[in-house]
Length: 188
Image 1: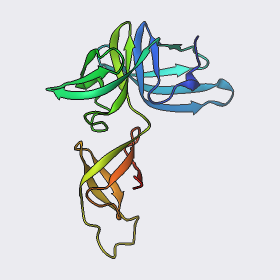
Image 2 (image 1 turned 90 degrees about the vertical axis):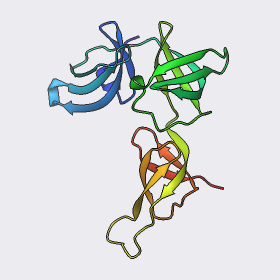
Image 3 (image 1 turned 30 degrees about the horizontal axis):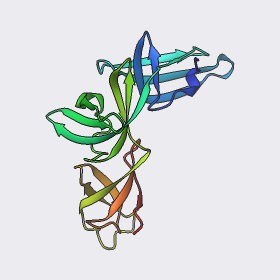
Image 4 (image 1 turned 135 degrees about the vertical axis):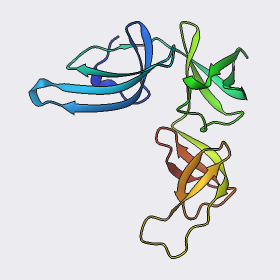
């Protein structure tokens, strides 16, 4: 079942020229009577190549037929990340270049969704928001109220984010995986 170009969004997986691609960036221009033009940056889930592509009008897009498997992140070995299927206990080795946009958002033991295309792992997806512990938070500058009070923080995975001034080392916070933005502090 095909879908239209306006159904594309960041993270959508579709098939183009018999290759599965993932949308990395998306922008749409409405041309009045001429319909829409959609500019996307897409990443091949087979070899990792990134392309800029423009789709016009009602060009049909074919969804990639992917199989979703619940898995758990187990460990990293060099530039390879290892995940274990929760049902079959099968181990999946995933190249870091395939999931470079989500590295830093998961830690050992986290639940993920492994996506397979024709029996081969092509993608790993996370929930919209993830909880991670703050291992270092800068001190907020006292009296600096001219702008929103944010400071730098480092999370347990090494990810660096901007957080509100009230966040302390040891707090567990929610991060939006798509934007990398702070969402909320975990309630005790």
